[in-house]
Length: 258
Image (cartoon, rainbow, N blue to C red):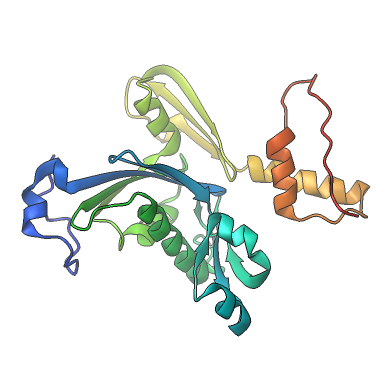
């Protein structure tokens, strides 16, 4: 269905009548996965990009002189993390603090900055309408869905949220007799496809995912080797490089300072 302009932002002077009636040529379609660990973007102009879901602002006058006003994103945050107030604004696939209000305002600001950065990766042309489909955890609550929409609504002309595992099944045309399992950093999502749109009882979300493994890995290393000096990102990097589900995996040798 073509958009007749009703969904355009009222205060968006970038969009002209010509771009509205130009059909699909005047629209940039963006698929976005706001992941706890990484944010990925795929757009109709062929762009495929991903980045760490990290946002950082300089801590003080010295760091602002070094890095500018910010914000910084992704690998730049990791590189300069000691000079930044770092926000991983997403937790379990949704805006951190959106359920209980804890640090909700700061994390929403960081999530909005992350969305703007992700959209910039898609390299939209000046007068293009931006239509976005955003993947959300299978059982994302109504409040959390609102938090995601609030983070993106000022940056796009139309937005739709979809269950992450359902979008995978739909894209692969596995519409029946299929179970999709999506293991992310914050959540593991399951979706059962049986020839219809999946209902609530066809989808499951739990919080036993990559971050859960990291926390236990870090806890065990600190317990058995308190002399090791390592950061949480170093532990995650080691896991992603060496982790194996085989009983016969090769021994992993990791060099950390003591």
